[in-house]
Image 1 (cartoon, rainbow, N blue to C red):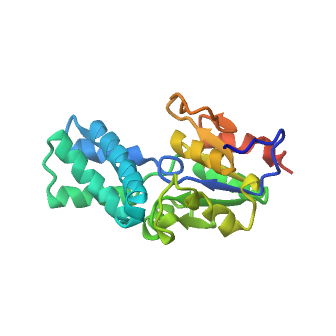
Image 2: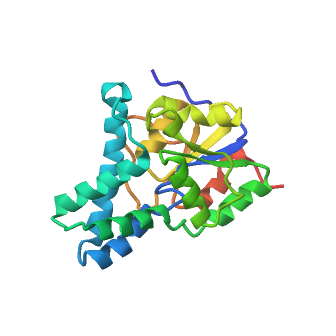
Length: 239
């Protein structure tokens, strides 16, 4: 049974962000994909992302996690599948170009200012992501966000991907805070939903004006960009 949500939010002491799709624009690979496969770049980037997420769920829920692979390898597998599905010839050179692009995704333009504003308020800011540690380190470095994200939490250590509750439990373990003292921010509706079920205060960043999941639970807050984090009730007003 879902735990009842409190009438008023607890003060937020940390904000944890999903990485891919939330801080880093996973569809920015579409530009390179379009250069390599004219007319198919957008379709490839969307199918690649969908298959990547599907594989995380498959390896987490099957055979007690015996088929776990790091996120980097699932990303590569998703790319190969998407190209086969679309009838695209993925040479070794094209594969490495696209994978390298995924390692150096663009951050959304408001990310730095939002993270800095939270830091200025004394709020812990970090990442809780399916990405493996090397991927996350490269993405943070490439986006120029070093020093603004600590902790950077990867599920790789437990070999279970979101939406497994053990993945969300890493946030309280890393920060020493209760889940209700942490805001979890995701652009992925399934991620925001599972984090809400876990007990975080949640913000769904609905960048693409999509409907939320129809499973009877809503996130605590919904916005359209990362800037909406700064208006969360539990943060109070800036000093």
